[in-house]
Length: 340
Ligand code: SF4
Ligand code: SF4
Image (cartoon, rainbow, N blue to C red):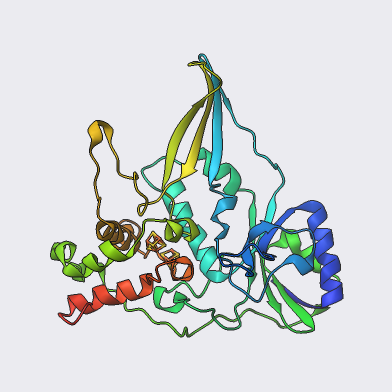
Protein backbone atom coordinates (compact mmCIF):
# COMPACT_ATOMS: atom_id res chain seq x y z
CA UNK A 1 0.00 0.00 0.00
CA UNK A 2 1.36 3.44 -0.98
CA UNK A 3 0.14 6.95 -0.18
CA UNK A 4 0.75 10.16 -2.05
CA UNK A 5 -0.14 13.82 -1.96
CA UNK A 6 -0.98 15.98 -5.00
CA UNK A 7 -1.86 19.60 -5.60
CA UNK A 8 -5.23 19.99 -7.37
CA UNK A 9 -3.42 20.81 -10.61
CA UNK A 10 -1.18 17.75 -10.36
CA UNK A 11 -4.15 15.52 -9.58
CA UNK A 12 -6.02 16.91 -12.56
CA UNK A 13 -3.18 15.73 -14.81
CA UNK A 14 -3.25 12.24 -13.23
CA UNK A 15 -7.01 12.21 -13.75
CA UNK A 16 -6.51 12.94 -17.46
CA UNK A 17 -3.92 10.15 -17.72
CA UNK A 18 -6.35 7.78 -16.00
CA UNK A 19 -9.01 8.75 -18.54
CA UNK A 20 -6.75 7.70 -21.42
CA UNK A 21 -6.75 4.11 -20.13
CA UNK A 22 -10.13 3.73 -18.42
CA UNK A 23 -13.70 4.93 -18.75
CA UNK A 24 -14.31 7.23 -15.78
CA UNK A 25 -17.61 7.49 -13.94
CA UNK A 26 -18.68 9.46 -10.90
CA UNK A 27 -21.21 11.87 -9.48
CA UNK A 28 -21.67 14.78 -11.91
CA UNK A 29 -23.79 17.92 -11.68
CA UNK A 30 -26.35 18.72 -14.38
CA UNK A 31 -27.38 22.37 -13.90
CA UNK A 32 -31.12 23.09 -14.14
CA UNK A 33 -32.04 19.41 -14.52
CA UNK A 34 -33.18 18.88 -10.92
CA UNK A 35 -36.57 17.85 -9.62
CA UNK A 36 -37.69 21.43 -8.94
CA UNK A 37 -37.40 24.41 -11.25
CA UNK A 38 -33.98 26.03 -10.95
CA UNK A 39 -32.35 23.11 -9.14
CA UNK A 40 -29.54 20.86 -10.30
CA UNK A 41 -29.41 17.11 -10.73
CA UNK A 42 -26.44 15.13 -9.44
CA UNK A 43 -26.16 11.63 -10.85
CA UNK A 44 -23.57 9.09 -11.98
CA UNK A 45 -22.28 9.88 -15.46
CA UNK A 46 -19.09 9.65 -17.54
CA UNK A 47 -16.42 12.15 -16.45
CA UNK A 48 -14.26 13.94 -19.01
CA UNK A 49 -12.19 15.94 -16.49
CA UNK A 50 -11.52 16.25 -12.76
CA UNK A 51 -13.63 19.41 -12.42
CA UNK A 52 -16.73 17.42 -13.48
CA UNK A 53 -16.48 15.24 -10.38
CA UNK A 54 -19.12 16.51 -7.92
CA UNK A 55 -17.89 16.29 -4.35
CA UNK A 56 -20.18 18.64 -2.43
CA UNK A 57 -23.52 16.91 -2.91
CA UNK A 58 -24.79 13.33 -2.72
CA UNK A 59 -25.84 11.87 -6.05
CA UNK A 60 -29.61 11.37 -6.24
CA UNK A 61 -29.12 8.19 -8.26
CA UNK A 62 -26.73 5.43 -7.25
CA UNK A 63 -23.91 3.93 -9.37
CA UNK A 64 -25.81 0.63 -9.81
CA UNK A 65 -26.66 1.55 -13.42
CA UNK A 66 -23.01 0.76 -14.29
CA UNK A 67 -23.72 -2.93 -13.74
CA UNK A 68 -27.49 -2.98 -13.99
CA UNK A 69 -28.67 -0.39 -16.57
CA UNK A 70 -32.29 0.82 -16.38
CA UNK A 71 -33.03 -0.65 -19.83
CA UNK A 72 -30.64 -3.28 -21.17
CA UNK A 73 -30.85 -5.45 -24.28
CA UNK A 74 -29.50 -8.82 -23.20
CA UNK A 75 -29.74 -10.68 -26.51
CA UNK A 76 -31.16 -10.56 -30.04
CA UNK A 77 -33.14 -13.41 -31.56
CA UNK A 78 -33.88 -14.34 -35.15
CA UNK A 79 -35.75 -17.59 -35.56
CA UNK A 80 -33.70 -20.20 -33.69
CA UNK A 81 -30.58 -18.00 -33.50
CA UNK A 82 -29.60 -15.99 -30.46
CA UNK A 83 -26.85 -13.37 -30.26
CA UNK A 84 -25.69 -11.81 -27.01
CA UNK A 85 -25.88 -8.03 -27.12
CA UNK A 86 -22.41 -6.45 -27.12
CA UNK A 87 -21.43 -3.98 -24.41
CA UNK A 88 -21.64 -0.32 -25.42
CA UNK A 89 -18.13 0.22 -24.03
CA UNK A 90 -15.58 -2.58 -23.66
CA UNK A 91 -13.17 -0.50 -21.57
CA UNK A 92 -12.58 -1.11 -17.88
CA UNK A 93 -14.21 1.54 -15.72
CA UNK A 94 -12.92 3.49 -12.74
CA UNK A 95 -15.85 4.57 -10.61
CA UNK A 96 -15.55 7.26 -7.93
CA UNK A 97 -17.92 6.39 -5.10
CA UNK A 98 -18.45 6.54 -1.36
CA UNK A 99 -18.17 3.74 1.23
CA UNK A 100 -21.94 3.11 1.42
CA UNK A 101 -22.05 2.50 -2.34
CA UNK A 102 -19.08 0.11 -2.20
CA UNK A 103 -21.11 -1.80 0.39
CA UNK A 104 -24.09 -1.47 -1.96
CA UNK A 105 -22.11 -3.31 -4.66
CA UNK A 106 -21.47 -6.10 -2.13
CA UNK A 107 -25.27 -6.50 -1.93
CA UNK A 108 -25.65 -6.38 -5.72
CA UNK A 109 -22.99 -9.10 -6.00
CA UNK A 110 -24.95 -11.22 -3.51
CA UNK A 111 -28.16 -10.93 -5.53
CA UNK A 112 -26.72 -11.32 -9.03
CA UNK A 113 -23.79 -13.68 -8.39
CA UNK A 114 -24.42 -15.62 -5.18
CA UNK A 115 -28.16 -16.18 -5.18
CA UNK A 116 -29.59 -19.54 -6.23
CA UNK A 117 -26.38 -21.04 -7.61
CA UNK A 118 -26.32 -19.25 -10.98
CA UNK A 119 -24.23 -16.18 -11.77
CA UNK A 120 -26.00 -13.58 -13.86
CA UNK A 121 -23.76 -13.25 -16.96
CA UNK A 122 -25.05 -9.80 -17.96
CA UNK A 123 -24.27 -8.40 -14.54
CA UNK A 124 -20.95 -10.24 -14.28
CA UNK A 125 -19.49 -8.98 -17.57
CA UNK A 126 -20.00 -5.38 -16.42
CA UNK A 127 -19.01 -5.97 -12.78
CA UNK A 128 -15.67 -7.53 -13.74
CA UNK A 129 -14.66 -4.28 -15.44
CA UNK A 130 -15.16 -2.02 -12.39
CA UNK A 131 -12.44 -0.54 -10.19
CA UNK A 132 -13.55 1.31 -7.07
CA UNK A 133 -11.92 4.65 -6.24
CA UNK A 134 -13.35 5.47 -2.82
CA UNK A 135 -14.11 9.10 -1.97
CA UNK A 136 -13.59 9.63 1.75
CA UNK A 137 -16.63 11.16 3.48
CA UNK A 138 -15.44 14.01 5.73
CA UNK A 139 -18.94 14.36 7.16
CA UNK A 140 -22.18 12.64 6.28
CA UNK A 141 -24.89 14.13 4.08
CA UNK A 142 -28.52 14.80 4.95
CA UNK A 143 -30.56 11.61 5.55
CA UNK A 144 -27.52 9.29 5.66
CA UNK A 145 -27.77 6.54 8.27
CA UNK A 146 -24.87 4.36 7.13
CA UNK A 147 -23.44 4.07 10.68
CA UNK A 148 -26.64 2.45 11.97
CA UNK A 149 -26.53 0.01 9.04
CA UNK A 150 -22.81 -0.78 9.53
CA UNK A 151 -22.03 0.46 6.01
CA UNK A 152 -19.93 3.51 6.89
CA UNK A 153 -16.67 1.55 6.52
CA UNK A 154 -15.48 -0.10 3.31
CA UNK A 155 -12.29 -1.95 2.53
CA UNK A 156 -12.91 -3.17 -1.02
CA UNK A 157 -11.34 -0.34 -2.97
CA UNK A 158 -8.44 -0.02 -5.38
CA UNK A 159 -7.67 3.57 -4.45
CA UNK A 160 -8.92 5.84 -1.63
CA UNK A 161 -9.03 9.62 -2.00
CA UNK A 162 -9.35 12.61 0.30
CA UNK A 163 -10.21 15.86 -1.47
CA UNK A 164 -9.07 18.87 0.56
CA UNK A 165 -9.29 22.56 -0.33
CA UNK A 166 -5.83 22.65 -1.98
CA UNK A 167 -4.72 19.04 -2.23
CA UNK A 168 -5.73 15.49 -2.95
CA UNK A 169 -4.44 12.64 -0.77
CA UNK A 170 -4.34 9.21 -2.33
CA UNK A 171 -3.89 5.71 -0.95
CA UNK A 172 -3.21 3.05 -3.57
CA UNK A 173 -4.16 -0.51 -2.62
CA UNK A 174 -4.28 -2.06 -6.09
CA UNK A 175 -0.81 -2.32 -7.65
CA UNK A 176 -2.26 -1.75 -11.14
CA UNK A 177 -2.69 1.91 -10.27
CA UNK A 178 0.62 2.45 -8.43
CA UNK A 179 2.46 3.69 -11.55
CA UNK A 180 -0.19 6.30 -12.34
CA UNK A 181 0.13 7.92 -8.92
CA UNK A 182 3.90 7.54 -8.51
CA UNK A 183 4.49 11.20 -9.42
CA UNK A 184 2.90 12.33 -6.11
CA UNK A 185 4.79 13.28 -2.96
CA UNK A 186 4.96 10.43 -0.43
CA UNK A 187 2.37 10.73 2.32
CA UNK A 188 1.07 8.87 5.37
CA UNK A 189 -2.57 9.14 4.30
CA UNK A 190 -5.05 6.43 5.10
CA UNK A 191 -8.79 7.09 4.79
CA UNK A 192 -11.04 7.81 7.73
CA UNK A 193 -14.70 6.94 7.93
CA UNK A 194 -17.76 8.74 9.22
CA UNK A 195 -18.51 7.48 12.74
CA UNK A 196 -21.72 9.41 13.36
CA UNK A 197 -24.76 10.44 11.32
CA UNK A 198 -27.32 13.05 12.32
CA UNK A 199 -29.94 10.40 11.65
CA UNK A 200 -29.86 7.19 13.65
CA UNK A 201 -31.89 4.07 13.09
CA UNK A 202 -32.61 1.19 15.40
CA UNK A 203 -32.55 -1.96 13.32
CA UNK A 204 -34.42 -4.83 14.96
CA UNK A 205 -32.74 -8.21 14.95
CA UNK A 206 -34.36 -10.72 12.58
CA UNK A 207 -35.08 -13.04 15.50
CA UNK A 208 -37.12 -10.29 17.14
CA UNK A 209 -39.42 -9.80 14.12
CA UNK A 210 -42.44 -12.13 14.55
CA UNK A 211 -44.94 -12.89 11.75
CA UNK A 212 -47.54 -10.75 13.60
CA UNK A 213 -45.59 -7.68 12.47
CA UNK A 214 -47.10 -8.36 9.06
CA UNK A 215 -50.54 -7.34 10.32
CA UNK A 216 -49.48 -4.36 12.43
CA UNK A 217 -51.45 -1.15 11.73
CA UNK A 218 -48.22 0.84 11.20
CA UNK A 219 -48.27 -0.10 7.51
CA UNK A 220 -51.67 1.56 6.94
CA UNK A 221 -50.20 5.08 6.99
CA UNK A 222 -48.45 4.33 3.71
CA UNK A 223 -51.70 3.30 1.98
CA UNK A 224 -52.72 6.94 1.77
CA UNK A 225 -49.34 8.60 1.64
CA UNK A 226 -47.35 6.65 -0.96
CA UNK A 227 -48.23 7.44 -4.58
CA UNK A 228 -46.39 4.42 -6.06
CA UNK A 229 -43.97 6.55 -8.08
CA UNK A 230 -41.11 4.09 -7.47
CA UNK A 231 -38.45 6.76 -6.98
CA UNK A 232 -37.31 5.05 -3.77
CA UNK A 233 -36.67 1.88 -5.79
CA UNK A 234 -34.89 3.48 -8.73
CA UNK A 235 -32.61 5.62 -6.55
CA UNK A 236 -31.68 2.72 -4.26
CA UNK A 237 -28.26 1.15 -4.72
CA UNK A 238 -29.56 -2.23 -3.52
CA UNK A 239 -32.93 -2.53 -5.32
CA UNK A 240 -32.41 -5.11 -8.05
CA UNK A 241 -35.85 -6.02 -9.40
CA UNK A 242 -36.46 -6.01 -13.12
CA UNK A 243 -39.04 -7.07 -15.70
CA UNK A 244 -38.21 -8.94 -18.89
CA UNK A 245 -39.63 -7.66 -22.17
CA UNK A 246 -39.43 -9.18 -25.64
CA UNK A 247 -39.51 -6.55 -28.37
CA UNK A 248 -40.48 -7.82 -31.82
CA UNK A 249 -39.24 -5.99 -34.90
CA UNK A 250 -42.04 -4.66 -37.13
CA UNK A 251 -44.72 -7.34 -37.44
CA UNK A 252 -42.30 -10.25 -37.12
CA UNK A 253 -42.96 -12.95 -34.50
CA UNK A 254 -39.48 -14.43 -34.99
CA UNK A 255 -36.97 -11.60 -34.75
CA UNK A 256 -36.42 -9.05 -32.08
CA UNK A 257 -34.59 -8.51 -28.81
CA UNK A 258 -34.99 -9.31 -25.13
CA UNK A 259 -34.58 -6.50 -22.66
CA UNK A 260 -34.50 -6.27 -18.95
CA UNK A 261 -35.95 -3.12 -17.53
CA UNK A 262 -35.90 -1.80 -13.96
CA UNK A 263 -39.02 -2.57 -11.98
CA UNK A 264 -39.84 -1.97 -8.35
CA UNK A 265 -41.99 -3.30 -5.53
CA UNK A 266 -43.70 0.07 -5.06
CA UNK A 267 -44.88 0.31 -8.66
CA UNK A 268 -48.35 -0.58 -9.92
CA UNK A 269 -48.31 -3.77 -11.95
CA UNK A 270 -45.19 -5.20 -10.30
CA UNK A 271 -47.06 -8.19 -8.88
CA UNK A 272 -49.56 -8.65 -11.73
CA UNK A 273 -49.93 -12.26 -12.81
CA UNK A 274 -51.69 -14.20 -15.53
CA UNK A 275 -55.41 -14.42 -14.97
CA UNK A 276 -55.61 -10.90 -13.58
CA UNK A 277 -54.25 -11.76 -10.14
CA UNK A 278 -52.24 -9.14 -8.33
CA UNK A 279 -50.55 -9.22 -4.94
CA UNK A 280 -49.88 -6.24 -2.70
CA UNK A 281 -52.44 -3.87 -4.19
CA UNK A 282 -52.22 -1.52 -1.18
CA UNK A 283 -49.24 0.85 -0.95
CA UNK A 284 -48.76 -0.06 2.70
CA UNK A 285 -48.36 -3.71 1.71
CA UNK A 286 -45.64 -2.68 -0.74
CA UNK A 287 -43.85 -0.65 1.93
CA UNK A 288 -44.05 -3.64 4.23
CA UNK A 289 -42.64 -5.93 1.54
CA UNK A 290 -39.71 -3.57 0.90
CA UNK A 291 -38.99 -3.14 4.59
CA UNK A 292 -38.93 -6.88 5.24
CA UNK A 293 -36.67 -7.39 2.23
CA UNK A 294 -34.21 -4.69 3.30
CA UNK A 295 -33.90 -5.63 6.98
CA UNK A 296 -35.21 -9.17 7.35
CA UNK A 297 -35.22 -11.79 4.59
CA UNK A 298 -32.01 -10.70 2.83
CA UNK A 299 -30.25 -10.83 6.20
CA UNK A 300 -31.66 -14.28 6.89
CA UNK A 301 -30.16 -15.50 3.63
CA UNK A 302 -26.84 -13.63 3.49
CA UNK A 303 -26.14 -12.68 7.11
CA UNK A 304 -26.15 -8.88 6.72
CA UNK A 305 -28.79 -6.24 6.04
CA UNK A 306 -29.58 -5.27 2.48
CA UNK A 307 -30.12 -1.57 3.18
CA UNK A 308 -26.83 0.35 3.47
CA UNK A 309 -28.37 3.54 4.85
CA UNK A 310 -27.43 5.78 1.92
CA UNK A 311 -30.65 7.73 2.55
CA UNK A 312 -31.40 8.25 -1.15
CA UNK A 313 -34.96 6.91 -0.80
CA UNK A 314 -35.61 9.58 1.83
CA UNK A 315 -33.92 12.24 -0.34
CA UNK A 316 -36.11 11.60 -3.38
CA UNK A 317 -39.57 10.68 -2.05
CA UNK A 318 -42.05 13.33 -3.23
CA UNK A 319 -44.35 12.40 -0.35
CA UNK A 320 -41.66 12.86 2.33
CA UNK A 321 -41.87 9.23 3.37
CA UNK A 322 -38.80 8.34 5.39
CA UNK A 323 -37.58 4.77 5.20
CA UNK A 324 -35.27 5.44 8.16
CA UNK A 325 -38.30 6.45 10.21
CA UNK A 326 -40.14 3.38 8.99
CA UNK A 327 -37.40 1.15 10.41
CA UNK A 328 -37.60 3.05 13.70
CA UNK A 329 -41.37 2.59 13.72
CA UNK A 330 -40.90 -1.15 13.32
CA UNK A 331 -38.44 -1.15 16.23
CA UNK A 332 -40.90 0.86 18.36
CA UNK A 333 -43.80 -1.43 17.46
CA UNK A 334 -41.77 -4.48 18.49
CA UNK A 335 -41.20 -2.89 21.88
CA UNK A 336 -44.93 -2.30 22.20
CA UNK A 337 -44.45 1.45 21.91
CA UNK A 338 -46.12 4.02 19.70
CA UNK A 339 -45.30 3.09 16.12
CA UNK A 340 -47.32 5.90 14.57
S1 SF4 B 1 -33.47 1.42 1.18
FE1 SF4 B 1 -33.02 3.63 1.06
S2 SF4 B 1 -31.35 3.96 2.54
FE2 SF4 B 1 -31.47 1.75 2.18
S3 SF4 B 1 -29.95 1.35 0.53
FE3 SF4 B 1 -31.97 1.71 -0.48
S4 SF4 B 1 -32.03 3.92 -0.95
FE4 SF4 B 1 -30.36 3.58 0.53
S1 SF4 C 1 -40.65 7.41 -3.41
FE1 SF4 C 1 -42.19 7.70 -1.78
S2 SF4 C 1 -44.17 7.97 -2.84
FE2 SF4 C 1 -42.71 7.15 -4.36
S3 SF4 C 1 -43.05 4.92 -4.25
FE3 SF4 C 1 -41.37 5.37 -2.83
S4 SF4 C 1 -42.36 5.64 -0.83
FE4 SF4 C 1 -43.99 5.79 -2.39
